[in-house]
Length: 284
Image 1 (cartoon, rainbow, N blue to C red):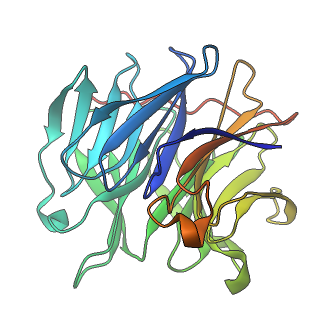
Image 2 (cartoon, rainbow, N blue to C red):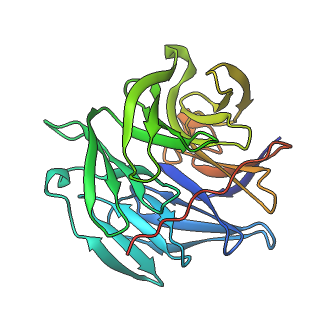
């Protein structure tokens, strides 16, 4: 059963993430710079911070603070209501913003940018010393990422190309190589957006204009679909005490007539499938 948790009418609700130190779910609305959190124990939720610019994604740091990835390639740590900037801007990304990010087992962060006029998006890796390195260019729309169960391979989504790729991943260095297509999304199934990997190694792909979450096995075969009452399902994560609760963000809250009355809300799906905690970033 798909359960509505909180409806802040997000234009582009994104980046749901379970905070293991607080036992709360965090998420954001990209173009309004709003950050939210929900406590399943009390049932309370709030818009606890609003930035003046776009926030495209975040990770949770080892100390529990949030590492924000913003417009113009800016990256900073949010503590209280103050942002301490690690990178003020990336010159090549002045007309762009980050979109979807993921920490790896060593605390680095893979972070992609949106395309801009005259330049497609780029996938970067932010190392723990705060240095940033471009890994892939020519990306239509950088999106959902995840690791295989053995941490030897990494998934990565290019929404514009409607493809989810698989790379070989080197844990010691953070390098990725040997790109190949894992899933190509048919035109009538929506656009692949954010994703999560469960304990069985199956991937959950949120579908923009696909009205749901799609679960694939390790061979890329569709195992199930969970239907949502809204068109634009944007991202997904696992949470709860045993990581069997799925939280999914949606978009289109500024146009409910076309996207559904619950568009832009955060939803929960209770399952008997166990997810995995996301890795914490360790950026100094």
